[in-house]
Length: 375
Ligand code: UD1
Ligand code: UDP
Image (tube, rainbow, N blue to C red; front, top):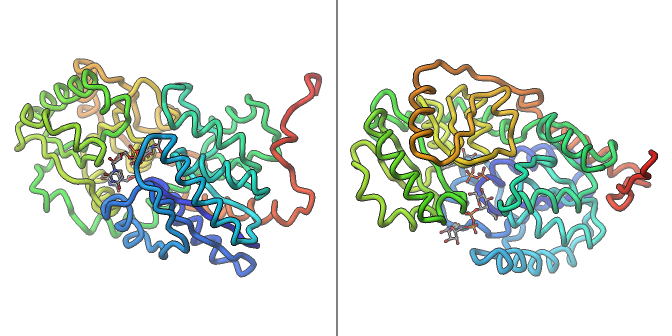
């Protein structure tokens, strides 16, 4: 079985690592790894390959940055050329980035069995580019590998056939559980000279960092909060550029603005922290498992299980509300939780489903998904 796996951006590397490992452990599988090049800085790409034990990609598409159309199109054109040279049976895509939807589109039209890992998450915010990517990727996919029961419910409500949907759990947590011990030995907080109690910030959503008023309000909140609890902010490259004119408003002793961290350093830092303020999807999940209070600085989340079962609260972007929620979170102990299937075995469940489905000659196709109104 020839199975092509795609990764292109920071969170993709964290998700694909355990899947590639599980595929390569199966003698019947020949796995090909494609890196689209959506993320390319050392700190956004290579460090994940080094730290997660990901082998070098078989193909690097070099798509790079650009507008949505430029980036999506660059991935599609380069990926189609790769597929033309492969007798692939299946395509595995993860998450919700432009590389995910671009390669799913090409794979579906090439007749591959498209498998979406992290299917069914919905923020219901159509202004989020990732929401468009999620919905379209699911529609292009034969197999919908869902991380949580809410994602399964979303897919059922959208009319997907039950045999397409599989609750497999969370592959990002597989990676976390594999590397947590090593990360804890790094003691990054001490290396960065942080106080015993500190908070971690990450921001990169366009709705937060590309909108000057929203970013201004967020910096106001962070500057005030950092007088209560020191904060460290490993800033995404998109965000670093935009923070240039705002960083003078923060006391650098209380709010440390640093470059993006590698996976192990970031995990070590979050694990040791008292609070996380973020707009990241993956970080909402990781804080749930680590038992670190998380404030999501957005109006919605596509990961509601991190709120209902975990440590997450969706608090929006208004400064007063953020500061109140942070003070409240700091005053309450949080406990680690592992939602169903967030147990370190999600990737092997994904691979079992993929292989079993590939072995069925007359496998279901997404075009069969339209239901009779009386069915
Ligand atoms: C992308 C994903 C987002 C995901 C995030 C993870 C889409 C639509 N967005 O957002 O869902 O949460 O990755 O981090 O796919 N840049 C660099 N170096 C790099 C990569 C990017 O400097 O290695 C800069 C470039 O100026 C680029 C900007 O960051 O224009 C944005 O990069 P891009 O991949 O387009 O989107 P992200 O904001 O990273
Ligand atoms: N991460 C990292 N270094 C950082 C910030 C995040 O290694 O400085 C990791 C984080 O632990 C998680 C992933 O990157 O595994 C999340 O990626 P990101 O927040 O960029 O994307 P999202 O999850 O929002 O799509």
